[in-house]
Image 1 (spheres, chains in turn brown, blue):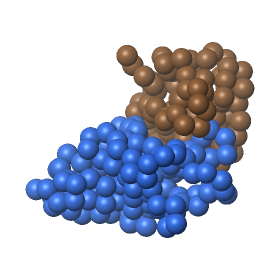
Image 2: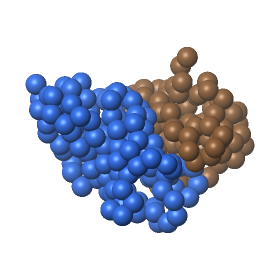
Image 3: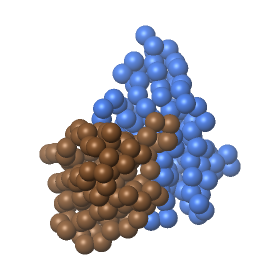
Image 4: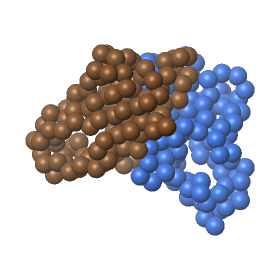
Length: 115
Length: 112
């Protein structure tokens, strides 16, 4: 019973490099989310998805792209990494049943440093 | 726009004493409010939620929260703190869609 799994757990990039963060959930959840956590700022929504093949922008989408080709996976891409994207990235998922009432389940995060 | 505020960056309590972590909210329409806890190097864990009904909501690990509509508050409480309760606590409100808007977090430190 893994829940939400994020890979990798840590990564160091150089400015301008690209990478993809993978989120996988085994709870058959319809909704998935990507957040970033920065000191003193809480969590901020980057992108989210309400179902396979659909994505939408959150509060801080610039510099990121996402894809949801399979229901269980939600990918976050950085096309050209910048130091401002140094952060801890969290993926979450939730059921669509009863829509907004369902709690989100979080992965343990990916710690990303951009040099 | 929906928002939450956690006015205290840090709360310090002695083990065995009651604890309160404060949260105020601003929403249009009915509030859907949540509390999460984060331990070091881990993701957020759901504690409890308020959707409708009783103003006192009971959650995991002995925590409860009191919803107060007139004061637009949703404070997290526990009658007797444990050292193991030391962590980062987040209040959140459901946004117009399904995502959450989080407060900036409050670090709870429980001393023995």
